[in-house]
Image 1 (tube, rainbow, N blue to C red):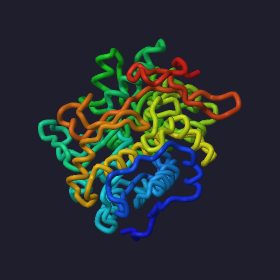
Image 2 (image 1 turned 180 degrees about the vertical axis):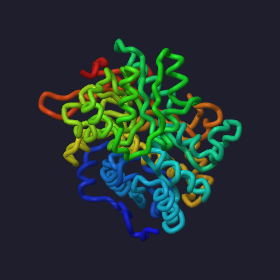
Image 3 (image 1 turned 90 degrees about the vertical axis):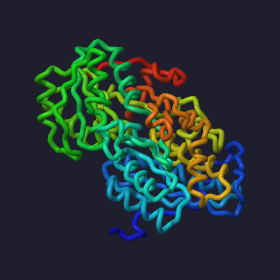
Image 4 (image 1 turned 120 degrees about the vertical axis):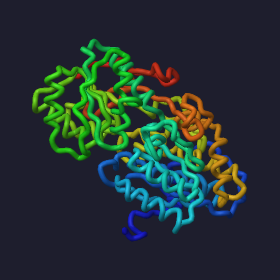
Length: 430
């Protein structure tokens, strides 16, 4: 058991955050009585192999705390690190519920963090807002029998917003359709919640790829933090795979891609979920990251504004880069949206300690956030998950090596979300 003080921070606002939000639009005043403290818990993977997902957390939370302070509201955000470990995620969620007596749990970034936190909240009857995990591994992965749809039940206190496997499959195949390929796809699916969902014979990539005329070479599940992908590379070479896809943690894709290059395997397309969402992951490949492709859930070019400040996606990304000296990163939009929805929810609740009232307020949400419209109205979601899942738009992008060094993520396909502009066309890996 870790000490309660480990990896725990209470964000109360900073001077830096005050400077960052200076000049922003007017802040909405919630209806809840001033002087009543609202305690939010937040769990994300700040260390370990998934740490890139949480890189911008401090920036977003500091800004939020300054904003509520300026509005005369008494909020506290208690932050816990899942350490990229599901067991640790459940442990710190329990600490937030039992020891810190939070009114609302917020959690982000991959099923390894979202699922154990959500499950803990559901058992303890604490409202939970979750994001940054495809909805299938989040919802189906928490069912008592994930293989039996007739047994699946909605959650009472847990609400999730993100896209689904149907969206990422559509985005990837739309990108591939821009190029002339042999339609032979190599799958890299780890033995974790994401990998098992993406590679699932019923709800994952296999049936859709077959329907679209692609053949899938799936060498089987591998363990995360694998140091040898020779078996997968040999299988792909033997079947003359022209497209590689999968959902990998960043260090595993770096290992795979470097070994593939060393062993003379370069597919025309590599569309990888999770691993190459982040600039630092692509930069780690040197000049070998050019034209790698991935899903794009948020970017500075997304046409949505913050409900907290009125800032555009571009303004927030620029502010982050100025404050951190780092390139913008996709989770910025969704972590920001978590706190947008949290505030919107709590301003519609008279008693923040009333878990049922908070859960009902989440369910009634109908707003536009930095990542787009959010409403748990069942739109685009199967009936069994309609109560708990709100979908967000998804497009496809490629990393392009810049003349002056570094990479730029260029949106190359928006067929699934035409409101998000493209800036180029798909190019083959050379």
